[in-house]
Amino acid sequence: MKQRLFFLLILAVAGMIACNKNSDSSIPETSSNINFFTAVPGREYDVLIDTTTIGSAVGYGESTGYHSFLAKRYTLRIYPAGNHTVAIGGGEISLRNGHYYSVFLSLDNTRTLQLRLVEDHLAPSRANFGKVRYINLSDTYTTPTSRLTLDMYVDNVRIFRRQGYLAATDFAEVSVGTRNVDLRYADSSLSLMGNNSHSYEIQDQKQYTIIGYGNVRNVDSFKLVTFVH
Image 1 (cartoon, rainbow, N blue to C red):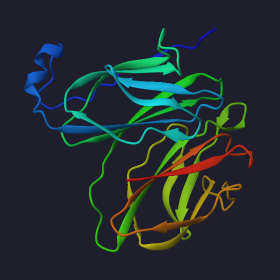
Image 2 (tube, rainbow, N blue to C red):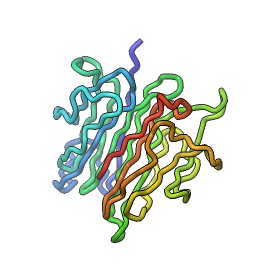
Image 3 (cartoon, one colour):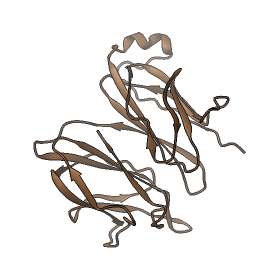
């Protein structure tokens, strides 16, 4: 049976909520940006904003990168690559002036598709600092009823605690240079990095989204990818 995932992605513009597309004239025509990432193995997707394609055959661990649109309301549709008969996911999304967004597609532990919309708060950091955040797309269980949560450390300092599946942290400032990044079981010293590198080069004023996907307890499955803003 084909899985169909339909969702509503509406971010309200304060004082400008409209009932239909005809009222979009109330939103100033400036730019907004959206990015799509998939952590679904063995499948590729075409991604459209209204009739504009922002990604074709986007595969496991890949993203479209940011695409710029006028700030207004759109319809997002996600299709199996090359087959636009039935969308596997989609919905209405309002893109706000000067804002950045990312949509993440993944599978939960029951193999059900899940979508997560995150606003990317790209405010600049202080001089001699970059920023790091973590997106958890790994739905892993320690027991049949207990979902795994993890902590993120930079140079042995915990910056994020107890991050579960679909968690999206805020950005945290990290000093520039080569930093040691570690993911650990929550409140534990046991690392979950597997075959992934601990070494991250943080550059001045850069912002980094680290995305974890696959089975975090399987070293051959769990992967980290970094998106530099």
